[in-house]
Image (cartoon, rainbow, N blue to C red; front, side, top):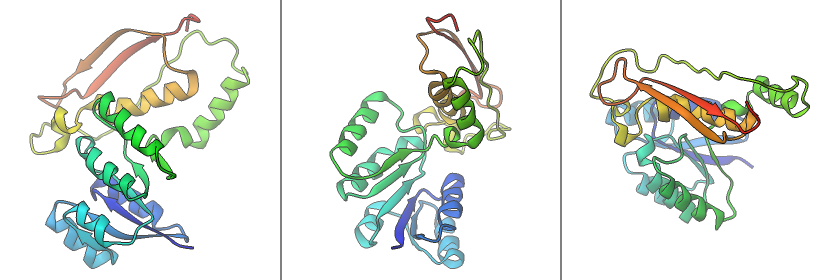
Length: 223
């Protein structure tokens, strides 16, 4: 059986997911949805997929088993709700939502259906970090006194007001984009902290969002 999938949001991450998923012998990406006409024309011409501007129409017209939601974070909610209503399996890019209330609502809806769903915190599935997790669980490293989680990326290298990454309301900023990966990885390896003693958000290139985040985690164990 070949799983038929669609991708909503065909930017950097949408294209990345297309490249990975479409190489699987039992998966076929048959449709994409994006708001940019050039993206739609290019995808339809060179990738052989149906291309839609409106995800409502794509989910209505195309026979799918799953969807990947790779829109800016602020736009995750509506396509996730519609896909869940249609009993489709869903992979949604991280972070899941911009506020806990919407996240809880979507989790509740997902819990009502027999569908597979996942948020894109993919780093914890890297073989290196899975092995580190085994070492920690086996206490091969002894009692931890301190740790440092650092993540860097060339996503924002100059100021811009045209990208969604420059708008906090759309999900821009280092906290949502990069630090969410680091937070998930710490939670996976060591568990959530018992308290936060300080956070610094720095705007380096951006005017309205942060480009660097530093936070101190403290655990009751003394870590």
